[in-house]
Length: 199
Image (cartoon, rainbow, N blue to C red; front, side):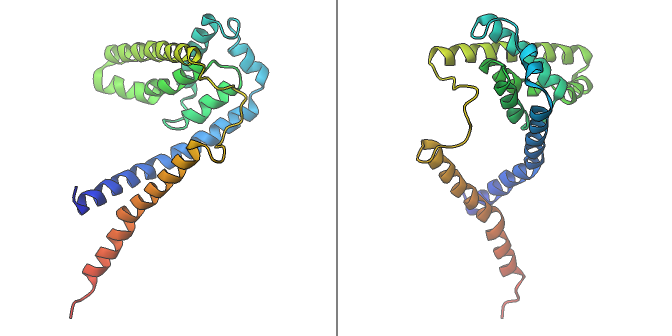
């Protein structure tokens, strides 16, 4: 890839970040407000169908998770912190996955589908994605549970010093800074060189 190609790729990636940062901040704020304002007893009632650990509980969590995600439609990226709030309040891990997948059937996207494809096709897409989100959430939960990969819901998040995620965070921070340099700084310095009159 040429230098201009790298610069263009970096500018496009930075442009995507420019679009996403508001959704990310809104997602964390909304998730935090919901987590603080809604009592745990309410969540327990909502996700209390079936005994914890049973298939009934996982399927019910996935179905209710998709419904909650559609009704709240936090935002495209903000649904991840919202799903974590739900998980810490009793939803099954598969329900967390279903909440994330349900991002594709929030009202704004379903309305766009209706305008582009018509009401019937929008309904088919909605039901198909709803069922796929539920089935995928249950399948992921079952697989991860069988492999003993589901961490405890009350485990504090973050990165343990010296863990592999620390090194990945450091590596991708450097990659991001390199991207900023290539996409912004190097272009600005080249534009300044072009603007200067040559003797």
